[in-house]
Image 1 (cartoon, rainbow, N blue to C red):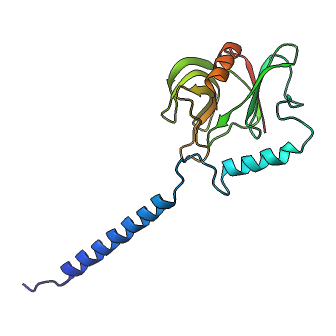
Image 2 (image 1 turned 180 degrees about the vertical axis):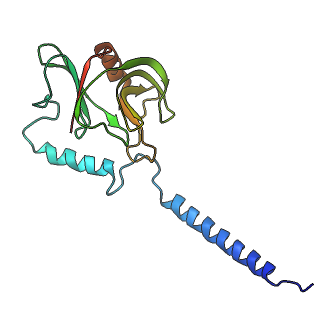
Image 3 (image 1 turned 45 degrees about the horizontal axis):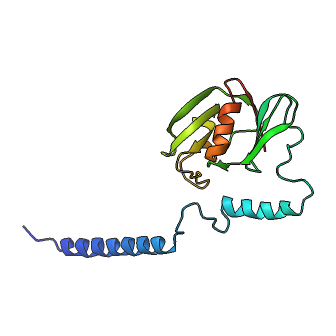
Length: 188
């Protein structure tokens, strides 16, 4: 039976391909940011920082309760401003704070708190507390929570999660305020 000469050629091509893949992996690791949630040019975080600078010259303070955000006792979540207001029966905000959104955001609309959980593991694998769920859309569950380690979700992550993260202190305030059936108004 004649011997094939393709064996050595395949071995050389395989070794070359592995070398190229290894080199590309090294280059990618060398140019990656030290922290995955660092703002990169063109990223959601970088665009948000630019928006903050643009709003700095605006007359309206970002902590002012937005007009057209509903009436009565409610939680108002402004997706674009990354801010939440807890609003009492008198229509005045009793507490407002910045939040860290996940890659997925709920559509604007009026929802209600459907469940609460004192603690557990978030859909991003982080230990969380004071979970307040208000909506589910396209297989993504949206809710407010505080990471026990104080971390915020990566808005550029590939996995679509609906966590809206708060600091632990703000998470405790949300937990006290938002009982089941409390209205949650989501605005752009």
